Image (tube, rainbow over all chains, first blue to last red; front, side, top):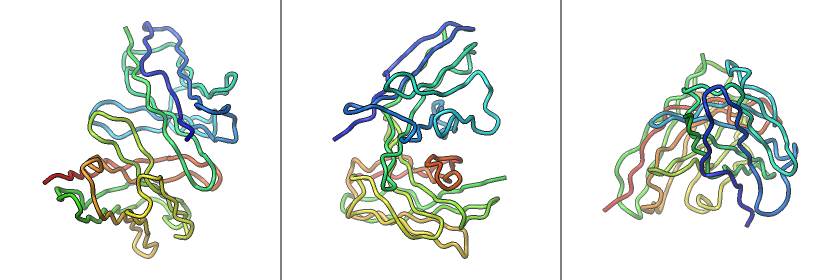
Length: 110
Length: 120
């Protein structure tokens, strides 16, 4: 069974750039998986950041961007701020109406 | 403003049943697919089930197949998740979520969630 993979944890310095990735245990992620990205802080509902690879959801700052890098989807945060410290999840569309989340990345800003 | 308000969570014994509800407002409900996503304590997000705007084509994650049924009432802007044969591992916050425009395959707006606890 194919699993969606993410880095368990990453850190970035304030003002720095960090790339979070979303891959598959078998195969490559492409735009056909319609990758989307979500931010969640403890105790809160998720917030949608990016959909269909690189489209920012309404109200999302332009320091968040999405792309395909190699065989993985990527969420790029430039000019990281302290309130970017959150859990980030990618979701892939597997076809047939089925979606799968990655395990999430805990981002620390320090 | 889009609003999604879940209800129906609570404590249930293993093997029992619960029906979750989600009241939607602020958008043309029948135009959008809807999903249920859950999060067990200390764990990540898990897609559970989705349904198209018309109510046809329900889909389920393996964890839900044969035990959970998703449905919707477009006349009353309601989404449901009927859960049966509950297991302790179904303990989670269950989020109702609005899909994006047709063909975008993502979760656009989230409710605040309702908590389900399965324990004897």
